Length: 384
Image 1 (cartoon, rainbow, N blue to C red):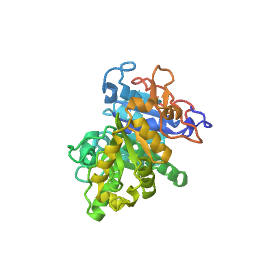
Image 2 (cartoon, rainbow, N blue to C red; image 1 turned 180 degrees about the vertical axis):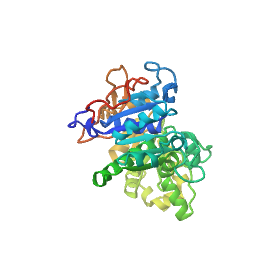
Image 3 (spheres, helix red, strand yellow; image 1 turned 60 degrees about the vertical axis):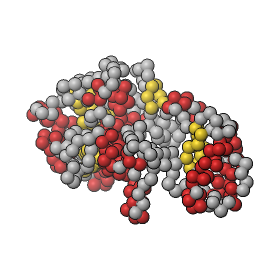
């Protein structure tokens, strides 16, 4: 197991059972594994996790996305439709700390392995149930995928510009966010268990995660009757705070207060702007957004991006180039963070957890497991 003195081992000794498919629950399992927990992934006998086949073969026949979300785990195969399979799962749960699953709603209750039943048989177990639409309500039994829940939660409606159709955000915010919330909830109940000796049930869902990411928009609507507006790269409450074109490429300028606007004005050689009644404070600039952004565009398109980035940085104005993914990962700052790491036992790299402990990032433990490669379904001797 992982070394307790290393950030990779902060959860060493913790046993996690994962009945995960594709992304949300597997991501929770990957977080636990990266932090040193012993994660045993329970897979179907007929091919295992569907994520193994999501995309072209990448490593030993499995897809890259399966490697991304299943690194550092072990795999065992159980037929949960059989009495023997259910008994084996119960034996594993008896000695597990945490169980994480995103099985189709209703399946676990039908099999007798729902949260209430499992926690009744195993009172110390922390049972994490990840669903699409939540654990209660009229849609609780509906399955769902990332784009469906981005659409249902309203996230797609606030993405893009004012004249664009609703669009999905490129990252799997709902899936991965739900995996993160499952881990946060499990660790909270783990802390409670230290006092009470009793585990409990964590309920998280893609819908709730999507609504949580959109909380500022929801709260503005509910409290101020302010429907969210789409500003593409801009912000509804700050001006200028968006992307601008230069002579050779786009970049962002983020002016979050009037002091920064004065610095921006100096950098653009427009000393009269801070005293102009249209621009003297942020509320005035909000009313005159179009006039100001048009004036800035006319200036910024005259010179290349690197010129403006250097001038704005020297003036203390927050700004950044709009990178491609390739440009981002090649940047010295990203490289210095050691976020993209080689996977032991492989010839490829993966993105590690975006968290460090005492300045050190947990390292990746191993490649994703082959289907059923753990052999028997017992816990490793001495793994806890």
